[in-house]
Amino acid sequence: MFDNYRDVDERDVTDTTLVDVEGLHFSRGENEIFRGVDLRIPKGKITAVMGPSGTGKTTLLKLIGGQLVPDAGRVCIDGQDVHRLSRRALFRLRRRMGMLFQSGALFSDLNVFENVAFPLRVHTDLPEAMVRDIVLMKLQAVGLRGARNLSPAELSGGMARRVALARAVALDPELVLYDEPFVGQDPISMGVLVQLIKTVNQALGLTAVIVSHDIKETLSIADYVYIIADGQVMAHGTPQTLDVNRDARVKQFVHGEPDGPVPFHYPAPDFHRDILATGGGRP
Amino acid sequence: MIHHIVALGRGTLETVSALGRAVIFLVQAAWGVPSREGWHLWLRQMHFIGVMSLAIVLVSGLFIGMVLGLQGFTILVDFGAEDALGQMVALSLLRELAPVVAALLFAGRAGSALTAEIGLMKATEQLTSMEMIGVDPLRRIVAPRLWAGFVSMPLLTVGFSVVGIWGGYLVGVQWLGVFDGSYWSNMQSSVAFVDDILNGMLKSVVFGLVVTWIAVFQGYDLVPTSEGISRATTRTVVYSSLAVLGLDFVLTALMFGELG
Image (cartoon, each protein chain N blue to C red):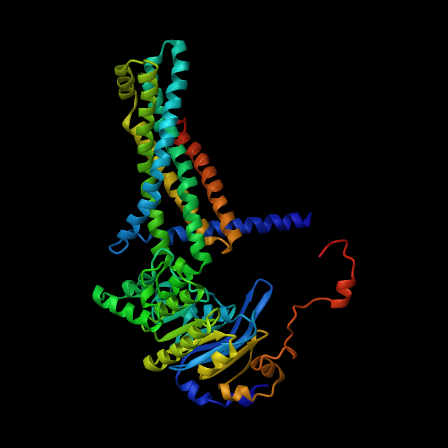
């Protein structure tokens, strides 16, 4: 179905792949989330993984980060199979990654400054003055240098996400995984964040994986896009090729159309019959 | 019928697997012995777990000592043996009441707080984000708490015993008029260092390990929702209390019973 996209960037991608996901299968109980997902995340590019809610986008990031173990298939980062590494080697590999969580996941017992300084303190022996400079630079980039003494409880959801972004890039990692970075941001910080992700990526040559369903923002900065649905890759290509894709499901998702092959409703009996049925007070 | 057998099998498997996870968890966490950089983390937990439990443990110790003094006196005076009050108070506290009651209080105050704290960290993805930063939460979060609980429990038990003996003294000697000298000298002559003091301390070391282990494991292994945290907190208090009382019987039988 998306064979026509397979040739796009394929050669280029293979040469410089940082993350290689092959034949990934993963289930939670009875619920099969991935049924053979193949992805290649190219070095130094912004790759977006998109799809309707509940398709397991966050789960995919957790599989890449080695927090979950797949039922079958493998995830290789820079040639290392993430799920075959020892606990120690996995933690060593993770030092080269940064992850921005949907909730921010800031450490509640540390203030904003200490949260951003945390990776620097545990992984480097930098003098305190240098740690301070780096933290202030990162906080300046996300516009929260003035909030350095606040505790996470005093931050709004959007601010917490920006602090978390500063922390995720504190060590200038090679790979940054963004989990829904645009959710809950006001228009100003949304614009700043979009630019920030792009600038950081270009300036430092980072590889970024963005999991999101904010189509406009994500497509504006992504170099390559994978769309996941029904546990498989539904389509992939550059934003331009996806925009003109004629597959009904891709079209429905990319253009945000309510009617199409992807159902909006959770499976349920016929609405009229359901409403008219007398259930003896039961829902 | 077949459903009951299936449920029994599933329950057994889940229990065995949870026990296995708990043992692996303990072994992995115990490796995080307070190190150079972990020293201040351990000290901070000593403050939260040990120092903050001090008030409730000491006040309870004082009241239990006072009650022992009062009850002991009313029984002993019938036999004209009120001079043995010091011996009775000290032996009851050192052998049984101090380790057991301090451990139960510790489970209620520090154990439940540990479970809720670690559980909330899990629910808000703090543990996951720590893992993604390349820091093992078992070493950074769990190990300092485990060691702090392990070390503070015997110290709290010592505090409990000392204050309890003083409470018995206040009621027996100061209020009810038992002779000062006989209270202390009977205690001194009847309390053996190894049999009574050391055995009591050994109990508190075991209780400290078990209660803290249950508390941190329940926090680490819970379902990360508000309901999951509430259930795990309850489980910590229930399991710890049962474990303390059950182990107390076993240890008492080994130390003081025919088995010993």
